[in-house]
Image (cartoon, rainbow, N blue to C red; front, side, top):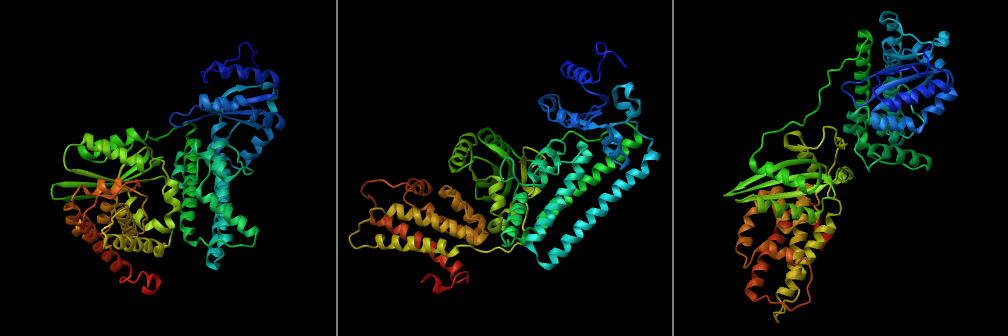
Length: 538
């Protein structure tokens, strides 16, 4: 055994860690150390074979272990000797590769009987095959049970069983990447921890917030409902949960194949390439728009889902997925774009965070599924943004349409009552006109697309009406003939002011025509179209 003064770890290339390891050798019965430097992944691996299980558990919780992981990107695993041999005998491919002789950086020959040595591939092959077959066999049993529960319509049991299967898959991913599993930790924590080693997992789980996920929350609700003899009805999420689970399954298959190849070769190789976001062809206008949006907001993805060229004007429709991008921010972005882009160009921007979209799919999936497609994606900040958990089957319905339609109708009737009074007292009429227009647009878009917009600018709402059904453009002449700039006028009167009305009869008549014609369109769409019965709104 080397003296501590002469003990060196040149492969580590770090004095701080070397000093810690020298101290470990002095204080504990360290048998071996195995180090593998990863060339293309984030974490290198340092496995320390130690005699005592108690020492292994205590040292694994040390602050310096977390510090080394965070600052040096070296994952440290303490494994006591008996466990190391037992797991290797079960065919652990993680130990077979990372504990190979060429990875040894320290060995204490005083523990000759405890020194661990891997076998040649041909001798280890049978154990590896047993390990692999055990995974597939038990996985198939889990999957068969879920299939039977789905056929029986046991909603709670389906999600609880899926939670077990996801946990089972995480067991194997943890063993294959970290050398041990963390079954006592919540699914959310396990997924978040694995993301550091397998970034692809991010693509399979939409977040509720920074640390929790939409699907794991669904599992929790199912478990709580069962405990209270209640039932949750979310059968449309079976397919989404299945997709996420099958994605984990594929990651296990991929890792098994990778480790098998590495063990056979006896060295670490990786063909993984550094990711670059694919640059799709665009034009100067779109590139300027993307740059402006990124400068002013925190963006994950941008979709150019529609564009219209009408006369000399081009209108681009963009969906921005990001955080903290409210209506005021969208207005600021539009104003900045108008100052940078000279010409007849308009932008219709809508923005939501990923969690809001996921939770709104029960109503808005028809709208978003037509937009969130690879062919429309023009910017992505990462390759690991999760895909949405689409409902299958999805049965769109106009929830609360009665209230939205009634609000539009009542505001139209109230407007007409003031507009047609014999004393020509038009006080507050401009605010009523604005209220009707906003109510009409949101209801019209909702009926046509199942998307209930936020309170966007008046022009954005009208442009979305045109996206929903281009035929509504036939009323553009009314806005163009308005006595003042139509959309700025509406936006101004979203706020109430304590002042006398300055409207005259001619101006009121123009407003009256717009209200009557748009209300006729909405009545024809909702009532005559059979979405609501006449008795429901009378």
